[in-house]
Length: 198
Image 1: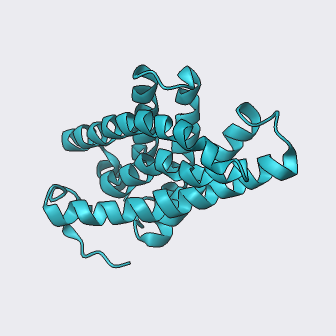
Image 2 (image 1 turned 90 degrees about the vertical axis):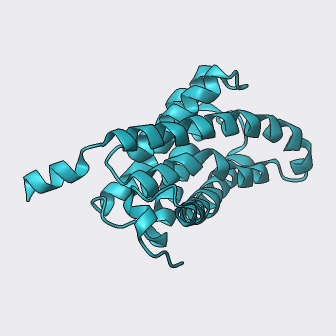
């Protein structure tokens, strides 16, 4: 059983290529989303912590990578590499984005690991999104938002980050996986051969 599991866990060349495509694509999206984040900031002046509702987009590749590749390390890889790409493109937050992406990817990875990389249904995607959001919230709590008021900003921001991550990264990645599967581009993956239900 151990030998069979270790073979199933081994990455194929196609896994590496697709994971890299996901990561690079979302690295570019991250960079663009950062620009939109800054433009949208004044719209949240009434309650600045509410801007965390936009956060989930930054966590999509972690959940998508886990749902598509279905190998240990896929969620972490996709999120971390996307963070590196956005940093190289010149995002506003610089190289701090790289450890941030690693923490977020680790959160999603823990959800897939909790199910031993055997469940890829909606509840798993929601948990992966929520844990990626929790990782993001913890990182931000100590690195980016530590100088804001605890109860009027930091705690609501953290909770809204987790909610955004579950909705956008969890449900969004699940739906995106479904959409990609219908095109046939995932035919070499279990995600492309199964019948999806929500």
